[in-house]
Amino acid sequence: MPLPFPGPLLPILTAPTAAGKSALALQLAREFPLEILSADAFTVYRGLDIGTAKPTPQDRAEVPHHLIDVADVREPYDVARWLSQAEAAIAGILARGNWPLIVGGTGFYLSALRRGLPLTPPSDPAERALIEQELAERGLDALLSDIAALNPQEAARMERNPRRVVRALEIQRRTGRFPGEFGYTRPRYAYQVFAFSPPDLEERIARRVRAMLEEGWPAEASWLAQQVSPELSPRPTVWQALGYAEALALARDELTFEQAERQITQATRQYAKRQITWARTQLGAQVQSEDEVRSQLAALLHSRLSPDQ
Image (cartoon, rainbow, N blue to C red; front, top):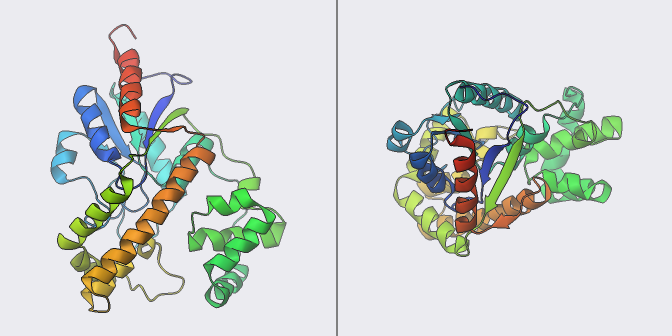
């Protein structure tokens, strides 16, 4: 039977990249009537398989997955589109009598799911162009420092994403307020966040980066460059995917394997730390061990999906 709402909190499973959240989600889906909804800004794109560690076709055949391969790399895709599709997918899952498990590490997607979207004014192309020029001249760190001086929480929310930084400064300079200060649309559902991080995360990241490079990531990056030029300004959203620039440089013999591996590993470790901070500060989650989260999620699902519920 479809689940009525307002109702029980829906589970979100989040963890830093390479932590094993997809594997844990699959384990749970083999035990419970779950469908997995991906909250990842780059697995939405068709063709970005290796570099995004996308669930395999076999995994997706075994357990229904949603919001994977829903966009072409040449088309724009943003959080508003993801949120609309995510809430529609959740409604469909509940209508089928299954339970959605939202799985991912893209913090601003998860925040939008829980809070709604900021009620910010539309973009001003002229002001945006000025800030993009400033970004090119001063660099990302300088612009982030400008934001942090006014609102440290807003700076943390940017996740070092150049597009979001430009947008935030565009709005603030026009209105005196940052996007997060405008209030939000009303979310359709309510959620409980489960977050974990393994003690050997750095080693897992290193192993995965090497494996992805060996499995053909440079060729995938070369294919992407044929579809969308990484030299465009502002840089296309798809080229903000972690590691693709370095994988392309390796394919073009601009970096050695060891250089590309080292640079991607370092950037991934830094991103993982930001993901953990986001889970704590923006999602209000307690970051626990994988075993603790597995036990808590299993208990929740047992209680919600037992025959007398």
